[in-house]
Image 1 (cartoon, rainbow, N blue to C red):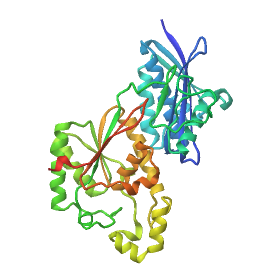
Image 2 (cartoon, helix red, strand yellow):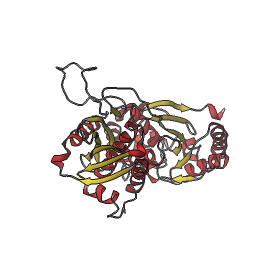
Image 3 (cartoon, rainbow, N blue to C red):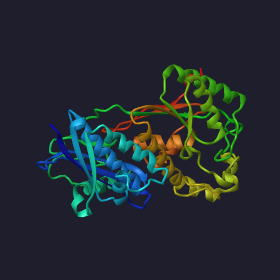
Image 4 (tube, rainbow, N blue to C red):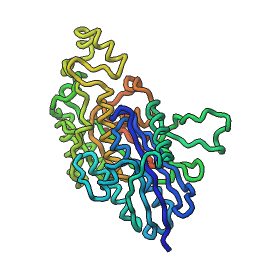
Length: 381
């Protein structure tokens, strides 16, 4: 017998891009009973990314609710004309960031008996819209949506979304994570001439030193034994060369992701911190005080965060529940750790990452992100 479910999904971004989140509801089609609510604050992203993430989460929740997904018929209702038309095959998908999201949605849909995509006015998608807005509220606070229930909250508490570690799925109450995580192993590249002298090294393409090559080879041995499913790298050669050593040992290809490149330090490139303090004292003070301030001719940490989170979200779709080695730089790795810890941007100045050090984060679909390692250098000894 075919089970019929309705998925109502929505997503949004305040600023496009800006603090973003999605919400999805799974209903029993014959009765309209709510079987599951899914919502997540996804940091900084665009409206379209959030809309697709909502659909993916809703289809995933529908599959998990079904004992026989292949005998489950789903109607996915959204107020996003773009997503509905693209998923129905009537519109082409042109934006490169949307392609892996659509691919993941189709993969989930292929495991169900059938999926029909329907556009509905926003007023008829109010439940998912509310969840998405709660998730966006949490994203603006640097946190993640959590469902309030009588089991864990007193009835007189403020109904505002709670800033709580990790994404959340509420299935008839509050629960711990039940799914396998997507694991990102975050490896800083090996030593370069500038890192050896503790100089600002941003988008300049600096080679590895002999020590850096040796560090990359040591990491390759460690990861060949540990096992990874995929390797992704910053486009800069110090990361690519580190990644190639590991890929050769692991028998994997290397995928380049532009979003994981280092911050552009502009006029400060190649200078030490002391030299910058001496030549640009006012600019340095402003930069240290406000992550939205960029070095002269460079890029702010806020701007770096935006592209790093988008790159992270693409990994979550492309390598869902797999282990991915990401070879990157100090700032992108720190930003990912900060995001997982729900820490303020000031935490960037409280972390130290050695060259060729490893940090690790487990990202759960239905629970908190968990930092498993930070600045681990045991593989180098």
